[in-house]
Length: 183
Length: 177
Image (cartoon, rainbow over all chains, first blue to last red; front, side, top):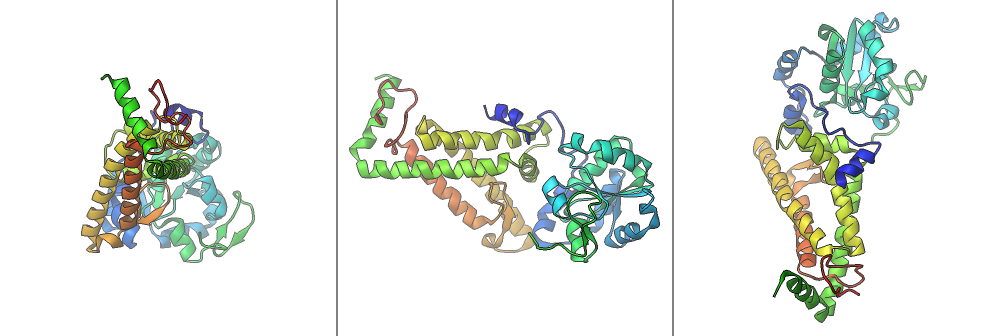
């Protein structure tokens, strides 16, 4: 009955799908990082590389954000969080790709990612593993892995540095320098 | 004496202690509401629950993990509803007990690991255990779970037949009637 309810629920999980491709680097990192606020460890980059991914620090993320190529669609940011968090605030112009429900987003994000020279994927940051798994998802969907970056500091770091934040839909034009209120 | 006789005898012992039986009814309602709330908050965000249970390193099998994340919240909701209505209450309490005991131990094991890793007291450890109410202090969670285990045991012992639709599911006569 419980699994039947899950099948009927619009938020239900597909039992046969592997929602955690790769080696879940961030998950293993999270026990420590989530509770004492450690920055991403030195090993993280090496572990991401094992998945064919590259790590972006805050300086690189900020540099790519201000890169004129972003306006041309050659640098793309991808937000791996769910709808609620995305609407509350995201990096301006970032596409959304919640890899738990990819069918809702792929039509927009996949062509943009395939056309881009650099794709920066982020989630909340810290213990969050969604950016890594979304990057792996994009890689498996055909985006060349050498173009994929994981911004490990994520949205928490971005907003803590008072970088521009867009609320609502993508390109809504509602851009602020910080979130109105911390959740 | 066959199994059915045993069931009736056990269930019938409760009304002879009305005060305890009323307390059992309150326990049943509290358990029911707590599990409906906790189950619902997880069922609305099963992917969040999946991420949390993955961190316990119970298994790497995605089908098993998905089944737990997808099924457990609804299972809690169904058990909660049955307890609230007083239908098969003893069976529901037993199932919750069987779920609470190992889960509390798993949470405690992870809390001990974090406490050891960070060199902090166990009661200072705080994380989202996937219990349905976000990040919590683990000592508090263990106390809460112990209370829930006690309440489940109380209902399982046969108390809480008042205002129960069908307290013992497989019984020819129902004491709550």
